[in-house]
Length: 347
Ligand code: SAH
Image (cartoon, rainbow, N blue to C red; front, side, top):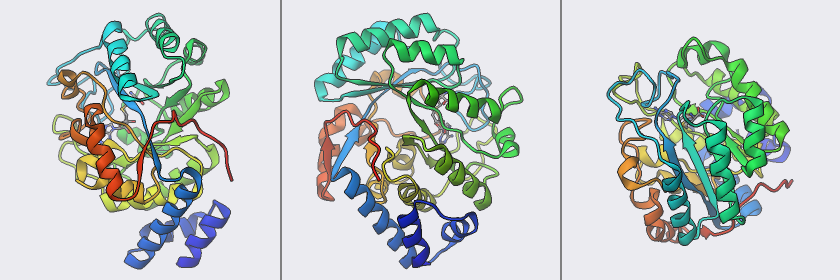
């Protein structure tokens, strides 16, 4: 089994059957060996600096109805909000003051987030803070829209594929969505020149080891610059409200496998991981993650961007908590990197 890890590290690839064996193996020595190798690779590429991104949750209105997501349109119990232009700019100003050099605007697929509104907003952020990277995570849009936003100054886009299996995709998503369109969006984003991020939820209902292997193969082939994975966490007011949460252990293991498959990718220790486990963030970093995304949304709105129950948005998960994040990182020999942390291709 150690030989599989060595080979994965050396070749940055592994045949499906062996990925599956590694994934389903339960030996703690192997788990630790995998983790240590992934941490070494992350250290070799990024050193002990962890990149930070200020996360601005711009709107929780959504035209989609994803079965796992707390802000799906059918959830009548969600209190809806949308940040206005000035509020987003205020968030960026605050993030900049705190030292952040990447702003991530994430939201539901809110029809009010038109190209006109967003290109103006992105353009203004780009003009005011030209040394900052602008990341968008606003779901599926047309290629023309992605292009307009890129031209306005956006550099990066996060769009998890969620699952690469069409049947599993249909189980997680409403009729009108399709895996084909999702993947087309991803290819368009990359073609336009965005640093593109994709990924999955770990432990989403219906997910099996074989499906995860297919996701890993897709990621290895697509070569995203960023990879977001976190455990599925149920939201009580969704059809998956009674499903069990994904496993922290498996998420951490996948972080390590992904680090070995894609050594120079930017991989966050996600909020979902930190939500499920008090030391999730640190476990993720020690398993090969190299990014954290503290919440920069106005504190009053944070509790409304409820993708799942219990979502962490304060303390080390918050922009105001950067000091505690720094202390937490220092305890395990890491520190915040204030660099904007663009993707750099390396071996
Ligand atoms: N509308 C955007 C942003 C979605 S929110 C888009 O479609 O890309 C960002 C990510 O949160 C999603 O891609 C999904 O993987 C994750 N997410 C949503 N609901 C979740 C849940 N219940 N548990 C864990 N992660 C969830």
